[in-house]
Amino acid sequence: MSAKQYHVALSKQERQGLSKLLRKGTAKARQLTRARILLLADQGQSDEQIVAALGTSLSTVQRIRRRFSSGDLAAALQEKPRPGAVPKLDARAEAHLTVIACSEAPDGRARWTLQLLADRLVELKLVDSVSRATVWQALKKMNSNPGSTTTGASGR
Image (cartoon, rainbow, N blue to C red):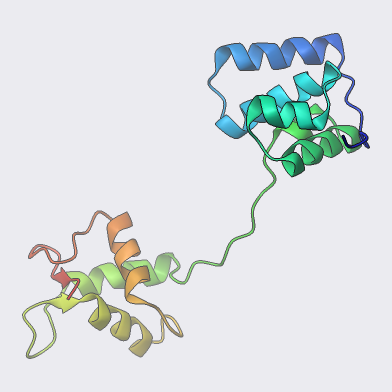
């Protein structure tokens, strides 16, 4: 059994707030799990007991304890922003994509393919490179239907 490095001592108001959050059940699942971790830790349960009770990982329990001890209740409950890749297509490029997809297909083609659309975006220097999957996701986001005769875009 590991020694608790970070102790959780909730105030009466914090305990009531967490209990209310759990009763409502409208928060995100991760936030509810964090609330349960804090309540069990406050009751003196070991990290291993919390892991067994909630089916979460030991590192999660330790991380929530550490966040509570070094910050406050909100820091322990809230998700930290996750870094992500910068989107390949900005609003301007997506607008051009829509215009291109709705235009006449190139000579010798019955319709636009995702690869043709991706190549055209690169040709117009709207992006350095872009995959068919990114084009498909952008069209999907705009409720375009690749392969539909109304959009002119095809996944082929």
